[in-house]
Amino acid sequence: MILNRLSLAAGAVLGAMAASASLWAVNSLLWLPQAREEGRASYIAEQAAADQKAEIERKGDDAKLRGMSDYDLCVDGLRTRRLSIDPCRVLLGVHPE
Image (cartoon, rainbow, N blue to C red; front, top):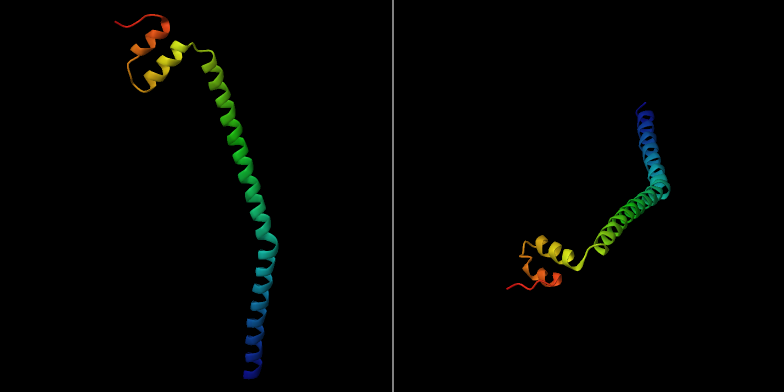
C-alpha cells in the first residue's frame, strides 16, 4: 500500500517534469523565435511609418521655405530666436541709421 502511493507520487512528479520540459522545449524552439520576428517586423513597420511622416513634413517645410524671400527667411529666423529684425532691413535695401 505504501509502495503503491510512493510509486504513484513518483510517477506524478516525473510526469510533471516531463510535461514542463516538453513545454519549455516547444516555447524556446517554436513560439519565442516567432514572437521575436513578429516584434521586429512590427517595430520596423512603425519606424517606416514614422520616417515617411517626417519626410512628408520636411517636404512641406522645404516647399514653404523655398517660397520665402531672403528678407522673410531672415525675419523668421530672428523672430524665432526673439532677436531684433533690424539687421534684416539690409535685405530690403533699407539701411538702418
